[in-house]
Length: 337
Image 1 (cartoon, rainbow, N blue to C red):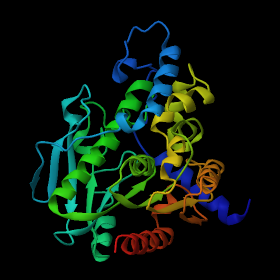
Image 2 (spheres, rainbow, N blue to C red):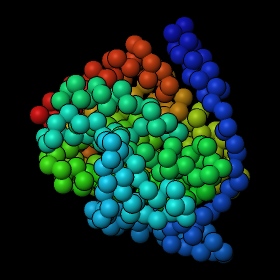
Image 3 (cartoon, helix red, strand yellow):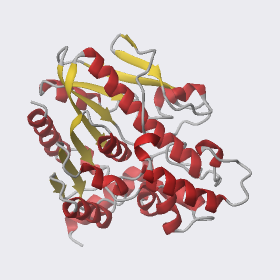
Image 4 (cartoon, helix red, strand yellow):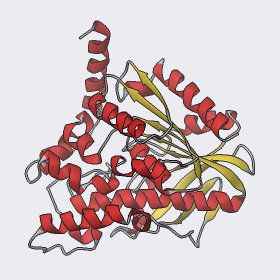
């Protein structure tokens, strides 16, 4: 291992150790959140059936209708989520609008897990300089959508199997409802930009959303469960899941909220794709990134990629952040021109 790689890995662990309030929450099957019964005597059998049926009809599972209550005030867009979770606070979607024009290109921006309201605003301003309107939406259970008593978004990525499935489905449908609003406003060249879990959500959205013409994804991997079971930032989640599930279990049960099963949906689709990763990423392991890139390549899907000598956190700091910003900014400007 080179001196530089050691330095990056020390930085990644330092940033991870600085994050407060990372509890280990109890394991739960949570089948009531995906149409099952909390008292189901055979939860594994239920999930096996659920996964097979959901992957086969994913277009319906992720299907949406426009919201009936879009409201824009002081450049904050709000509307009701199509998926009703048990917490009313989470069922109101919030988006920050950064307008560059009244029509033309627009991009939905999805931040990383546990991002705060003010994070990635500079990303949106940078897109404005590219002539692109941006809408940064809050992911389920984040900032204004947080559940009282849960400062972290542990319901989006957590030890409750069914709730995590519901929350990530909710995120995809929230993005699609945002796209419907943008279309209503006259924006007709639509793209998406996602980071970390936002990349996963964004890629799934792109696979199911005909209106999206371009997508830039920062950190990419195969399966949601692969990241959670192996990643540095999800150690606390896996500690609880591992009491009941194997790596294969969590990969399969969370495959409906994973990018890998949907790659074939992009075959022949007129979409531009940019995939950015870090070679020393301890959260989205390079082995999984490489497998994902190979799958897309084997499927005959055109894409651009950029691999940098950095990790998960360090992708967002100089000089890597400048390189990444220039690349996705010029990519989206060209793709949505």
